[in-house]
Amino acid sequence: MSRLSQWLQSSSADWQPLGSSELPDHVIALAWSPNGAYLAAATVSGPIAVLDGTTGREVERVRGHGFGTTAVDWLDERTWLSAGQDGQIHRWEIGNHSPVQSWDGGAKWVERLAVSRCRQFVASGAGRQLRIWNRHGELLQSADDHASTVADLAWRPHQTQVATAAFGGIRLYSPKLAQPVQSHAWKGSVLRIAWSPDGNYLATGDQDSTVHFWIAATGEDLQMWGYPTKVLQLSWDPTSRYLATGGSNQITIWDCSGRGPEGTKPLALRGHDPRSSIAALAFQHRGPKLVSGATDGRVILWQPNKGSQLLRQHVIGPAITQISWAGDDRRVAVGTEIGTVAIYRV
Image (cartoon, rainbow, N blue to C red; front, side, top):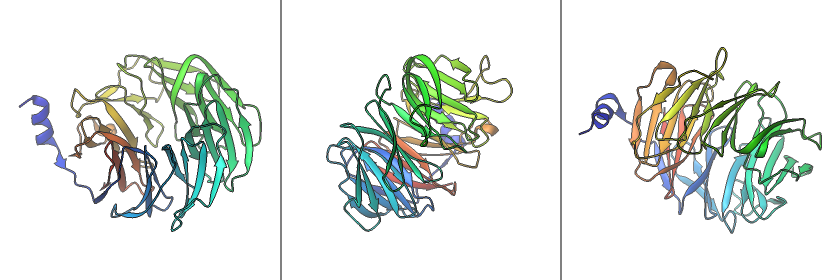
């Protein structure tokens, strides 16, 4: 038995889910309703299930999008949105198995969808186009001059601005203005965006296997190297001090306090199979705990501000694809490549 295996067995308790459901395909997106009563789980082939947020049992299932679903998010406790490869954004209500409204995403494939934190605005990314809507489906703004496909988008905390990622850097848009309110240029492709909870910093995972830290007010950036693969997993802790990143077989935690992370040694969290890759990770909304999942099918609970030892773990089996915390920080949902969705209590 390897030292890693011995350490895992001796230092952690097995972590069993509250409940689970089986969907027909790879879980591509998870989203909790604002009150935590429901969990929407979308599959890459199209079907979307709404699960009970406590038991994990399936409440209802809809066909979703014919060519595949890409994203889901909630407008309120009973109304949710989905985007797909049919170029549409559908609005759904619990108990209704057909969309109550459909919006044209502006291209054949709507890759990204995000509801603002105030739940009054919706942003979508399709091809090179960003569209911003109000919650009722009225199109407010459209920007189609990105240099490449909009790879990601994220609403800024405490402000009504949405950031887009594409080749050439980052842009910030407002529902009230047609032109970007701010741009951060970079000679490369940005793949993922994560705002710090205080809204002061923007972290990006980039095509060249690096991580950027952007200071939103000035546009100043720091670049962190050393990742063996593209960094597609980013999550800030609620204090905006720690940033967790994937991009390898371990989780890398950067301390962004003081003068920032440049030139410092990050904390490495090792617990997944060295032959695997980190596939998803997420900090609590208000607490210090972090959950990670990898292609080894293992889910691990950590508390990085207390050190690198794992707290609990569970091997689901199939590769992990998605992780999402409920708003109460007491439950976390995990999706896999074969359609398993499990809910754990923390």
